[in-house]
Image 1 (cartoon, helix red, strand yellow):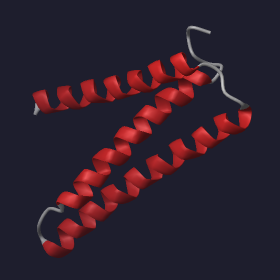
Image 2: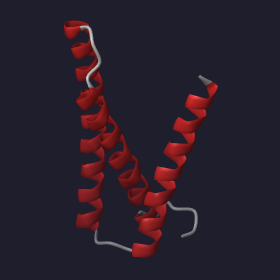
Image 3: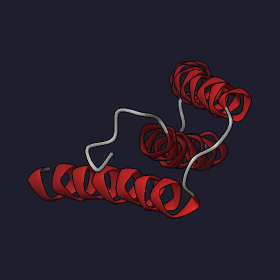
Image 4: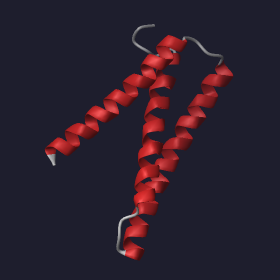
Length: 97
């Protein structure tokens, strides 16, 4: 259990760092693009939440795990973390600015 949580935390930190590095390398973006990235971050976090709930409902109704919900949830969370890091890096609140 502890190793699994440790792996999850390391994965979260690495995906956020990857987004921050991409944003740092890319540099500044226009405000309209910045707001579009912000909307994309919100959309992917909502998608992750809905997929999580869909996986729970699938488990209750069919009494088995859904591999497709798990894969889509992982992809949605990974993309949301990278976009969150990118959004942080290109915004004005990054520590190196």
